[in-house]
Length: 321
Image 1: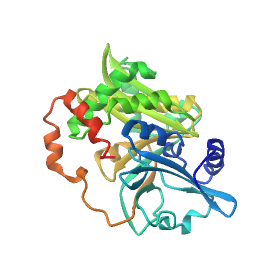
Image 2: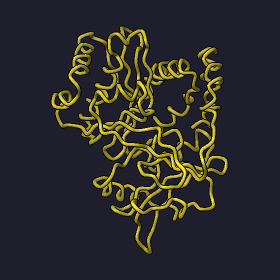
Image 3: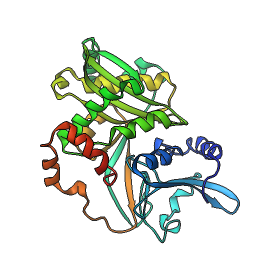
């Protein structure tokens, strides 16, 4: 049944997060922000058994396809303890085309090449620092001695953040999410925090990240770093600064977001000694090729000006999610 009470939704997930990982993608406010930005329709559902609420499922509808959740690593149903083990997604959306992202395999068809790396946070910074591998710990401490300036905040940092993020996406040959999406998140996100963190060399932004939290789960969702500063371990410094903020705000988990298994990004995140959680993209039909699989488009995208990439990215990202 459609959710008509956000408090009941949040209270249900607050109780269930002791049994399973509840992520930012389960925040009931996200559907409306995605709809405003991209023109999708959205609905949040309670899953019931008799008169009892036994689960929740956030959804967005994209051209007749149910997606949970586009532009985020996760989504999918959260059910009371024990119910997910024998759950079949097709019982809920049997007549629909769907793509549901979850830590659980819920359908006959799926892909599982992605995973999430999550840290269980320690209450003290020094204790947290000692949990990461020694080689990386040395890199973080070396970067701290460089006296780079770190700023954390909101919309006042959007321009610097978006320049770093969209520049990085252009290098990868991928369309960036439009600036309006981040502006909408900063202005309309509820039930948690949205924060931009930017590292500067003097007045020059050299690394930036955009994080979102919900019910004690904080995630670095999107970031970008100037490759010229890799020798100074600026990316590690960005992660550490955001981990420190998560500890200060008494979050329970810090997520690095999703990575492709065995990619360079995955190996770097492993140095932080995280919990590794497989992500299943549960599908209503056998997976086919998507725009993301067309390598020649990636090569073409790299050769355009940054400004053009930013403008086109706003429109393309509606369909590449």
